[in-house]
Length: 578
Image 1 (tube, rainbow, N blue to C red):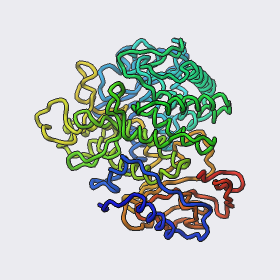
Image 2 (spheres, rainbow, N blue to C red):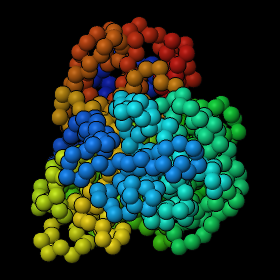
Image 3 (tube, rainbow, N blue to C red):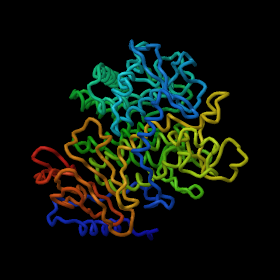
């Protein structure tokens, strides 16, 4: 482990190394000084228990397993048809939230209890790794998602269930704000991956109008547990206030502006974001605050704003410390037993720590593309993603040894396609054989309802967003250095060229192989220099010691021009905002 040195000295040395590890002699601007995220600094550069699965393959295998109508495994089919025709006159589908969840299936609760957060994430993840869910096995799954657009109750947004009738069986519906906001962010992302689906544009328009009205009505006060989008009224119940819902509103309204060009959405997105930033402390839970951080970064780069991105990142990583909020929720740092668990999201405090796979994956969605707009965070986000993407494997029963999982006798039932829901520092069920064992792969399924079997610890819901990692994370030929696709989850934005984040965790410079299918020039927007020119096929690019690069892959000969602290490609596209 590197001996700690003065932070300013370290960055100065890094900048010198960065300059020495490039090929161009005339930079097109000043090197971008990196800005630390203090909690990421506590993580190792390279975890001792590092291992990187093939996330793209896992995402494709998951889709094949879960959307198999004739699944012959021990768990049987995990998908069924729901012909209740709620909200829209069409058949839809349900997915099990957890394996053998007794609340679900075609013959239970009229086949209507299923969750959009599960189905939406599965469809989005599949699309991100190249699976066409508009035409798979004779089904247009993307169109079938529209039944979650709740018109029958006049909310006119996407919700976690298709109606109130069975929603009480699970979490969130019309009582826990993030459950009502996040499906709309997911749906917007899906519609960017699968554009042109019949009826989608009108649904997206209506969602945007509802979110615009909601933020206008709230007028800077988000001190509520949930919000009634039919009556446009904030509500209070036993659930902590969720002021970070403003981040979700800001993100969806920005997406709506980028899609439709209506400046009302842009102005209201800014208003929601300013409301979020006006909070006196972190109210982080799940994903809405990180989506707000991305929105702030994007607007700073493209709209001339000066939002405090650092505050939102620190609020996410350090977590919520308020006794009136989701106290203890943040990003985990440390080693549990012999396993590095750095970078995972969940409770920092519950029985010493409780991480969740779904949450850990979804943070990559806003944070990896964020570095295109705020490249000063490239080192911090690259380091966090290296830790997080390695730690995420520990939820899968074949990736953690038998001693450290609650039900090793069941580890083969899904062929490693479905993960445990969570990873605890210590068992909370009181199983004798797990006393003193840390960590433990585990799940809450048996607690949801009397009679839910041990198998319900295996969570389809948690595994469904695997395609986010599958689309972003690509190992290079140097173990521990990843190629992270900054465009994969940068929805609705202009993406004329591929953009990749590399982070080198080692104390020495490393050369990785870059593969191109066209003749290209490789430009680093951190050092503001070319790292290679006129490449065709494979070439070696140098990543300086303990440093990051953001490489833009430009067609060979593309002209670059500095203009007002930006860099413009072909007199048209901004490739560097800082």
